[in-house]
Image (cartoon, rainbow, N blue to C red; front, side, top):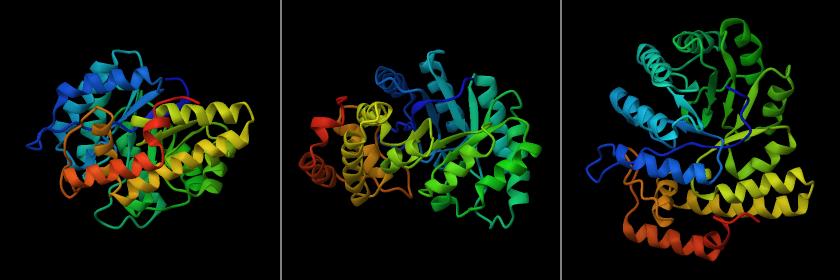
Length: 303
C-alpha cells in the first residue's frame, strides 16, 4: 500500500429504520465518494459507528466496502475493540477480506495506565495481520487514552513491525508535526476537519474525516489553494469548513453529520444508541442553518 495523500472519508454504516445494517446502500455510497476523488475509505471508525456494531456486522460492513471499492481505492478497516481477542479476529478477517490496511482504537472501558500497556495491546492486534500496514487511532476525546505520540512511535517501531503511522484525531498540531518530523518513516493522517489547513502547513499529506463524505470538493479546494501558495484563498475556504462544523456540532456532531448525508441525497439511515437520531424538525432546522452559511452553494463545488 502506497503512502496516503489527500482525503480519506471515515465512511458511514447505513442502517435500516429498525436499526439493522443495510449493506445494499454501501455500493452507491462508495461510487459517490470515488466520484469525489477521495484517496481511500476508513471503515468502522467513530463516524461509521464501528464500536456500536456486533463483530459479525463489522465484518459484513468491511466485506461490503471492499467489494464496492473493487480494487479502485484502498480500504482501511478500524478493528479496535475492548476485547483484544475480538480485535484480533477482526484484524484477521480484514486481511482475509482484502483490506489494504488496518487501524485500531485502544481498549478504553478500563483505564489504560501506561504507554507500555498501550503498545502491548496494539502489538497484539497488529500482529494478527502482519502483512498489512497498521495505523494507531489516536482519539483521546473519546477513548480518554492520551499518551505522547512521539514516544508511541519511537517505542512502537521496536514492538510493532507493521506500524505505518497514526490516525491523529486531536487538535494539537504541534505534536502531530513532531510525529511527522520524527524520522520520515511514519504517516500521520490528521483527523480534525475544521483544522485541516493548519495540518497542511505542519506537513500533513493525508487526512481522515467525517465531513469529507459530503464536502470533499471543499477540502480538495483547500488543498489546491495551499499547494498554489494562495493562503488567503485557503484560509477563506477553511473558514467555510469551520462554519459548517460549528453547525454540525450544534446539532450533536456525529448524528448531525450522518443526517447531512440525507440532505445531499445519500440517506444513510438512523443512528445506533447511545447516539441520538435527529428528528425531522431538527434536520429541517439544521438545513436552515446550513443554508444560511451557504453550505449548499459551496460544499459540493470545487473553487
